[in-house]
Image 1 (spheres, rainbow, N blue to C red):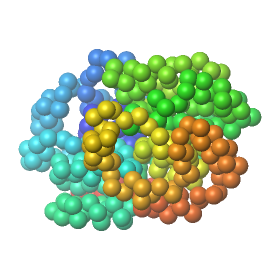
Image 2 (cartoon, rainbow, N blue to C red; image 1 turned 90 degrees about the vertical axis):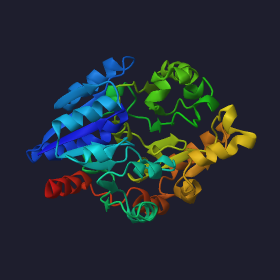
Image 3 (cartoon, rainbow, N blue to C red; image 1 turned 180 degrees about the horizontal axis):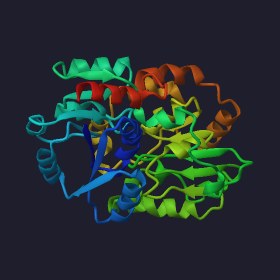
Length: 354
């Protein structure tokens, strides 16, 4: 059996990789399809080499579709919307593995593509998707990306990042929009000198010229000795999660991934909105965010502004169990059963339908 992984973005790869490993152990031939980006080609090639499997390159989605129609793999795995799946379905079954969990409305609208099947994370989201798309098939398996860390694999060490093993470690993982980055001062690491800080931005913050101000601030932080700034080719956040004691983030799926590991979080309620999302245009922001955003607000302690952030960090480092019950409750709703066997369940399904 042949399975192709449509990797429109580098950050889809950590969701795919655990499944790739299980499938190849079962004798399945796996192929990634990367969309060539000249600005990111070095990083793409680095990630491609790390996969140790076949990688094909295309320039755009039309070229990818032509490739799939030519090669006719038994399964195509997608991580986002893909146009005209109907023509592909003549030869190939398709499965959607969403590249993130959390509060963005695109989690639901991505199913507009109508794949053969979508793998989902937990009973609540499965039910809601089934109501929105009654003719589609949804299989509740959990969130595959977390499998390696839940299985207890050693993914990283503080030493390899040049950090102090005697300090607690904060992972700051903001999204690119709306982001808290612009609201945090240039001397942020100095004010947190008693901690290690791993900064793992969304790769758009480093690679997209639209966010050059974010990149400038991130590079300033990276000069402090207690900071490790993840690069564009540090695609997988799991190694950073594995060595971190606390997460700071904003409206990012990382919040819910970290909560699934039963570690404390500080959720930033402060972020910079573009002019077109403020005031009378606030509805645009509300449309971008899933209506469930604040339904899960008490999964973590919140910081209303940067001034409040430090006291919340100190509190959660000292009392990491404070939100434990809520983390467990919401993890079931958003990530499903975190058992480290999600990729195996998906692989069994694909093989049974192969």
